[in-house]
Length: 149
Image (cartoon, rainbow, N blue to C red; front, side, top):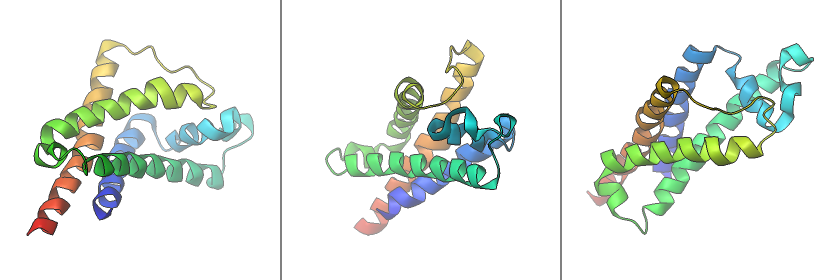
């Protein structure tokens, strides 16, 4: 499970940096709004350091959970370790789809999800491939090779 922890922290960090650069420092309020709704935002009388930290913690929880799913799946699906580039790319797309089609619609996020324009969808998918899927799959590949040696 070291691979899941390392992969999740890497993915959370890379994706977080991308989100901060795209949406600014307040992006963690958006993540926290999945639990708190519009009360998570300073404009609605919420916000604050505690809510900002909650959003950051949820972001890493999601990333580490995704990495754990990938690593646990690799126990039955050995090709996830051997073909980490292709599998990681598809896993990143899968994480994007699950987040946008399942998790966010079921959350308390107070703003609509999508529709995506083609350029935004292309950028979001590329970000999830490079910043989420590949760090997770590469972490599993690296740690499984170390264990075998």
